[in-house]
Image (cartoon, rainbow, N blue to C red; front, side, top):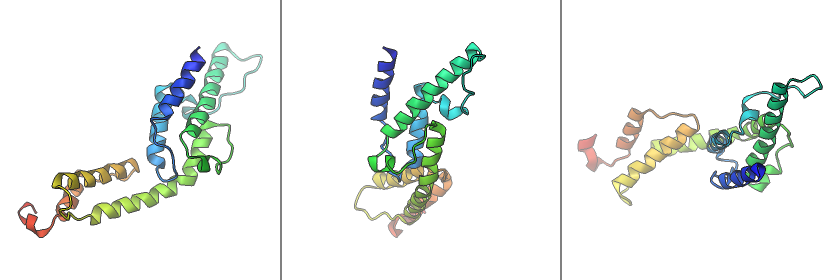
Length: 176
């Protein structure tokens, strides 16, 4: 019964995670780690593979190995459920969740860096053109700063304010 509930929970939680498409690695990884943690299935991501069980293994060692093995198996399934098919097929088969996540990171971290550059360029060159309200314009710039933060590129609040002020046309001179 518990196994069925875990699998149902895995599927329902997986559907709430943005599907990894190759350009959203940081967001995807953060969500994967959070959800596996909530499900108490992140053991395989947190510790190295425990020693194999032998006849002399203690009850504690057996329990750790069993928990790790379950976390590892379900962790890999969970990650694969949250990827587009063409990415799954290009990744090497790996039976270790921690190594699998590292393989994904090695392959797609550069796409995140490229995205970071595009987001930063958008933030620094965005101009208010009046086609939408001021509120929406400021929110859009704030969203860009938040996305940059998820990529590890923190935009200080004072810089964000300066970018927003710089994006305003001359008629907003009194604010500048």
